Length: 268
Image (tube, rainbow, N blue to C red):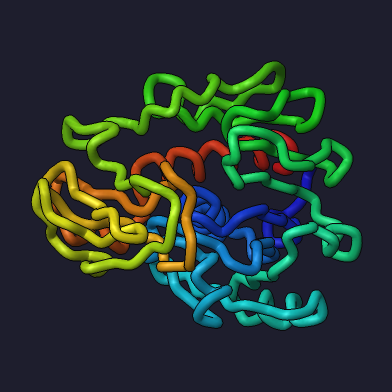
């Protein structure tokens, strides 16, 4: 189907780290009619590279691309004309009917389908496990680190969730900071700090949140009242390179390239 990329309307469910990486890649490839749908209180871990931060701050920037919160569908087109990415709080996705996207991407990465349907757009793409290509979506993109990362599936499902984070710098589970108990979260450090193994990063209620490895606190959720036990609170990068704090990850770029390819398979 021959259609200019600039003329396509694409809706991204979730402006978290991976959804934002994909939006950034598509924007650089020439798509300019991109809308991000978000919840009222998004909790991104890698906040410096997540467009959902516009919900909290009104606007944000990821590697030179600017996003701005909008409060109504009528505000979307003027932002597109200004070269910005609108972020709309719409957890029920009710705006889909009026926006009429050519492409819908579900990047919530909830490990299950929260309601995305193949009839939501001419091209519907799901990221990771929880979707079946050819049934509830047209295509599925593999999100598991390894040989198949970024593979596009037109039938079947992505690899099941193992619960084991991908390895970075020789560390996997150890680099992810999780809530030790359920309760109220508070921090004793800041995003971008260099931390040491055994350091108290904060606490949930009165239980300390500890760093298991040395490295850069690359991700840190906003303190937002109570968190459940096991909730992902942060991400420690053992490589300790501060430039990684504000740049999209290798995984994010791989997924961005995969979704761009998926779009081009239909619209070219």
